[in-house]
Image 1 (cartoon, rainbow, N blue to C red):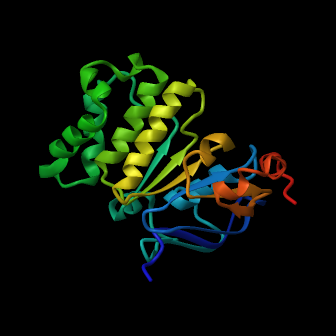
Image 2 (image 1 turned 180 degrees about the vertical axis):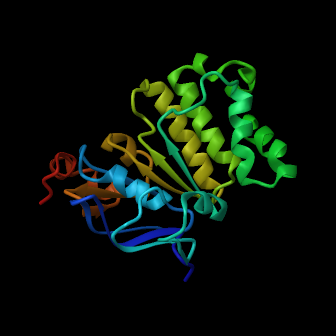
Image 3 (image 1 turned 90 degrees about the vertical axis):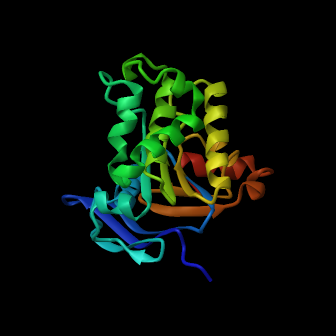
Length: 239
């Protein structure tokens, strides 16, 4: 049986004396699209920081593509095949093209230009705006830019945080379709999403967090006829 693309086992994490994560277990199988939902303040962002290497857990283990990366730096994890999409961060004064070129550090110099061209082919709208400052892009276009930067790193595992935040539904629909297309290529994806409706329309499985731990795990089909259960999970009061 192949190793999980990404997994955490018994992970605990704290900020100083304040513990935030308590024995978290989570897994993403090869080629799987998994969601992580829950209300604000339950530890989703901290878990994401642990996964990408920005926060060292106080206990537990993180595995990436079958290798223990618990003590591996964030930069090294990128080179091992993990990329993270957070918000709509970009260098506003730089052009779209230059923003993309900056992310070529994760690939061989000879392939950097090829990787940038491939990312622009996936997002034709960005190609049309390649010479514009990133600050002139719309919210949806900035989200495309962040996804394109991650693609340049050629990840095997992609972490996506709050893809739909602040965007119009029609824009969100296009971005979700892009994630489906990336997943169809074999990329394993974990989507951290506050909107449970967005998550359930996209993923194969979904985890719900509550008070720093995993409270429940379900498949979207199992929740389709259980709005009461979904409501309790979203509000942080699972049965």
